[in-house]
Every structure is written in structure tokens, then in C-alpha cells.
Length: 120
Image (cartoon, rainbow, N blue to C red; front, side, top):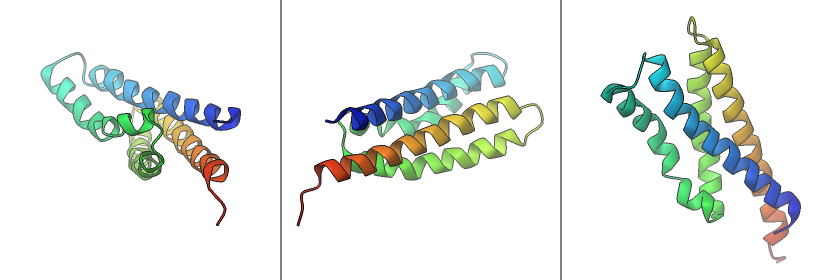
């Protein structure tokens, strides 16, 4: 794999795991501590993301493509969070992670297809 494509893949994984970690840490902090409810909400928020982990680790292009659609739902959630009183910082961090993940996904998919696509 060329260096640029490998860099995009590392960026995808960085932003992906950053978003997963963000939800695991921010939800208990927002709800005032670690409780069964906070853990349940964290799992519900991260479950759609965690479904893509095996495909992203194995560099399955289809997983990268579908992840680019799913991250847009998290972006909408982040924008809504940013407009809630007292949650601007949390929303902005989530927005930055979602935008970074989306851009890295698009760059990786584009570079991967250009490099590995066989001419007709």
C-alpha cells in the first residue's frame, strides 16, 4: 500500500477510535457519573460504530464506504448537541471528530480505488 493511502487509513482509524472513545467518556461525564444508565447509553451510541471495526481493521473498502454514510448521522447529532445550552464544547469536539473521519474516509476510498483499480 502506498504511503499516502496508508496515512489516510491511519487517519480513519484515529478519528474512528477517537469518536468511539469520545462517546464512552463524554456520556458518563454528561450524566454526572458512571451508572448503569450511562453505560447503556454509551453502548447504544457506539454500537453502530463498533459494527464497522472488523471491516475497518481488515481494510474492507465496503466497510469504509458504509462508514462514510453512518458518520453523517453522528455529525447531525453533534450539530444538535452544539446548539444545546452548556454543551457547545462537547458538540464541537464531536463535530471535529466526525468531519475528520468523513474527510479521511473519502480520501482513503479515493486513493485506494485509484491505486488498486485495474484498467478495463
